Image 1 (cartoon, helix red, strand yellow):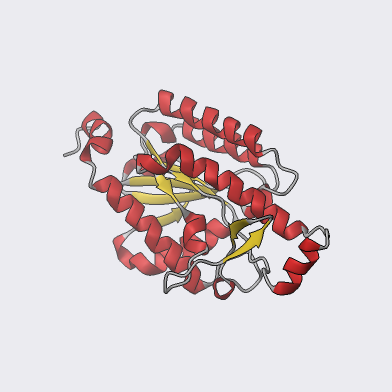
Image 2: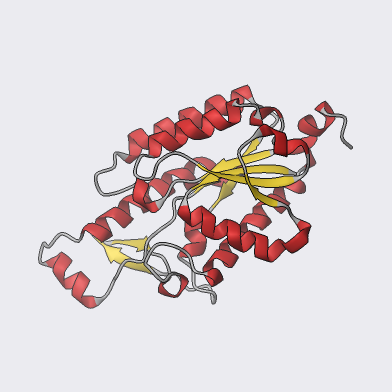
Length: 240
């Protein structure tokens, strides 16, 4: 397949791990030009500006419209944890995302567009945090994380059953033994990045990046196993 992926720093962690996992079996290259998609390749690129999720919607659409949309088989991009905070209007953000993706889907029906949940941060959930919350103290990190989770829930509700959702946040919030990493917030369980998966509270270390990269590969395998999704693209270019 020919894949393109727009991201920022957490995505860079994943791409480095993807190159390590696949070795010579998959060409992973940082490039957003249509010319590299003349062959099977996993092309990735920096999309938009951190802190401005709308710029990422626009930048991704511009890359697809630049000629990439005529050649790529699978396309996806992700927001970053800094793009969603306690002040984010997630309903407006999600409607804008849906509109952007629906328009691209209409213009480029041969492309399989994957949807990606927003990565999480490592947020404390100990007894002291709970007591501060009960005392009415504001914990901005927990509020930010709760808002990210709420946005991810919108993504899961809209695309989870389609087979086109790459749940990055779920991988980040699950220990290797399957236990969830979460905290209680206003009576709800909110997922948080597993502490052992990060050195700075947000970016992925090698172990975590490889777990995420492996899950991404699994999503792509599912696409490969659904020939109808790629049939239009390959027949259009005379490929078997």
